[in-house]
Figure 1 (cartoon, helix red, strand yellow):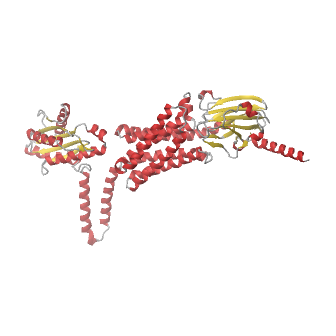
Figure 2 (cartoon, helix red, strand yellow):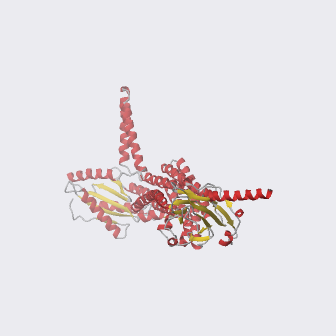
Figure 3 (cartoon, helix red, strand yellow):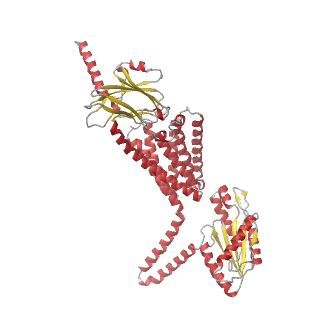
Length: 602
């Protein structure tokens, strides 16, 4: 009696286990998840064959308790099996989807009882065209008669995380569902492409490498996520199986590399946080070494190291943003929010791949949501960087208007006091609008006004008027070599030398644009202007300008034009003559003075 009860209990357990292990799509259903119906077997020796596994007793298999089979990063070979049953009233074409496309080696057998019905070698180590169905995920076609049951046996081994989100689909329904997924991917990658293209054009116009690093970081991030969801293998490199195995390591390391360079320049860490600047460069070097090691040793597995480095990099990048925000950098605010979004999504993805969080739509797509927000916010941060100086002027104007409104609302007894304060604010605003913020000299707007006044006066009294145009030699190369901060200091030093050589009461001088300066010399003929120009040239050439303790020579080329105006509207021709003489100075080797001929009257 006892033996009979034991046999009955074992039979019940087997029948109950088999029923639980089968998945099916009945009438009115479109899909059925297979997670908790999966049975699995771990093979640390990598020696079990299909025949060995088929011959094992049911007790050798473990039941998967989660919705998705997830073993994190594992070097073992894993065998899985599940029974598929057709509960529909008619014969139906079904698909078994394994929605994790970065598995290296995946092999699937479909058995109808003891008979092998089909065999599918899959995985990223095989060209994309060898798949039975052209799709970014692994799709196994099944044809089951009504009421029929088949057993699907899978073997998987991978350097990536061992994750198998297995779902049974009605074939037509899978295509419809996949369209909505592709729309989301299209929106995401379209957003990245728009941001990258826009900032690439900005880089081509401004030649500021901050924008280039941003573009490269965005492209690396997008391609990394495209590799993670299988779209890159399907559309970009369907035959490059070796590169497919390396792509995740290289692309995620590239995000770290270009992200570090971008943050260093955007936040100006070299000037404000030198210690953190060196830390950023260290992370960039480490990422570069990982990329090199991955390309040199294709079979090596660095993905765990890359994930740890990426996580540390995100934390460092976030800390840099917070510190610069506290120092008052307005762009750091958007930058901090951007990296917070990316870090949040990256943490969820990393915990999911290590098997600490379940795989679901939220954990799988969090990094895409986070990176999309990051890309948009960083683009805004770059735009804000351009508008900082303009915003400061707007704030000065708003302050003046606020002062004016306050004066109008003041009691009658204080009207005179408020009016005087307003007039003083307006004078300061007018001073700011005609002053170059970098050098302290007047700007081109002020010079144009003085040129019209002096030209009219000299025309009326038949006096000579001279114009000098100065250009710092090889200034663009100077900026590229020493950086914009040193270039700004050079402009200030040249402005000081120019001011020391001229008469502040009668001569007018201004920063004309970029590295170019302009001088107006009333009551001065060509020879007098040449003498002044030569004095300025020598003063600049003898500047004790140093960079990192080493003297750097600074020179200017000068163009001179002087005439007695014969027409009241000829000031543009006089400036053009000086400009032509300046280009002759550049053509004659620079660091010299050229006086324009007196052929044309103005």
